[in-house]
Length: 250
Image 1 (cartoon, helix red, strand yellow):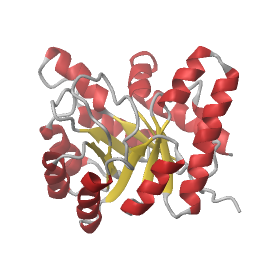
Image 2 (spheres, helix red, strand yellow; image 1 turned 60 degrees about the vertical axis):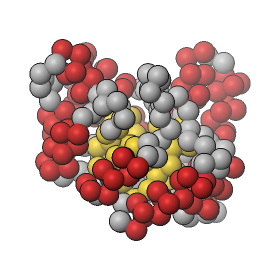
Image 3 (spheres, rainbow, N blue to C red; image 1 turned 45 degrees about the horizontal axis):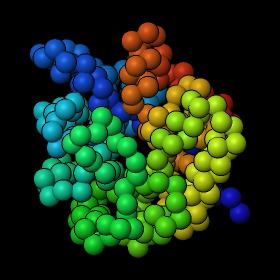
Image 4 (cartoon, rainbow, N blue to C red; image 1 turned 90 degrees about the vertical axis):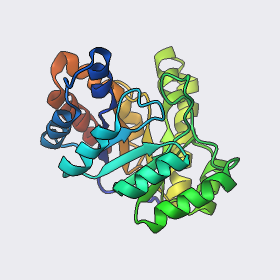
């Protein structure tokens, strides 16, 4: 029996609106304006990553989004006491725990939920107890799914970065192998009562094979949509991604 997500949601990460603002200083472009456009364009949620070094999203942005956004908010966060305290104070709809290294430009891989079980367990438990939907950003690997089960995380977000990199290489055999890994991981998660999401490096060109995986309930996409917005506008960027996702799922 195939566990099928009835509606494939699109969460839009607005981090890089803040990146552009911070490049010059001041308050333009305003991430809250991006939130309003995503809402109007049919986005299903807003994702923001408050990093330790505050390189893009700042605490004041989180305050503003929590106050002014009507969509579900997914807070990406490192597994630290500082970020746990912030999440518990703001109580977003969801918290996605991601690996974080200060020297990286973007998240470079999945969280080692299996190897970090003892560190993650109390953080996941406190977020669960606060009514925050916990997601673990992991590689599409059975060992990591099993770790998510032990940690009692209701959601996993499967890292699609390697798939996106292979797509650029044009190696069809390697792409199919990676796509099968993601498909199998989504099926294993759903079979065990965990809702699978996916994200990282997804574009108009490569999104449809991922969107077609029946168990995946949500895609989180940011950098590409904000980049395309420079050329076609944010509303059109979100609408086009939404259309491609629906066509693949339909």
